[in-house]
Image 1: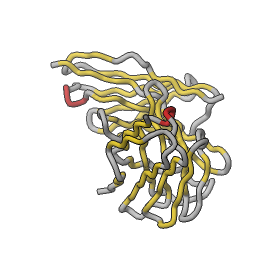
Image 2: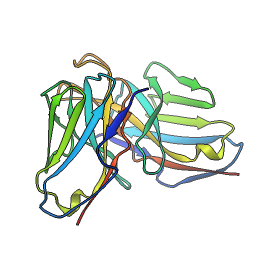
Image 3: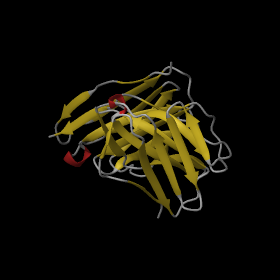
Image 4: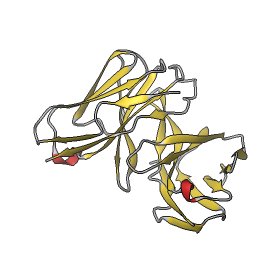
Length: 114
Length: 118
């Protein structure tokens, strides 16, 4: 069955450093991948989408890579700030039963320390 | 700004009660979704709808039903609440049209309802 793995351990980094989060998947060939941010007690908020034919996507301090051979996406936040502290979810599309749905990973919590 | 609202932020119910969770979106989105989120398990899809009066089962539909009588409103119903339905419930909507050849767009989430069943 399809599986999405994100590091369940929290990632602790110092302010100003680059945070790198990993999303691995198996038994899957997604057409695209999305990253969401979720703050405690709130719903996820969309950040970036990258398609299978794109190697890299950038938005301000965010960068996402998508390696369909390794079945992996990396999510980078450069010059990280304490305000970047949150849980980050990756999501992949699954075509099943005639419809496209999103399958979410469990998320990785990022803590940026001053 | 897309807005997805959910009827309650926190809800406490007793085992066996019928529970209604309401979700409303104001951006004329065709697609609406109900998820539950539990620690370590991520978001799991309960039901979704690509059109008014249309519903499809997600990955964990047992114990739940839904209703979509109007485009902007998608309701989740727990017919007889049980303690294992204690969870965070998230509603989402997306703007893309129905059809298997269209890639769904990004999803916009509501703030969530933390349901506790005693």
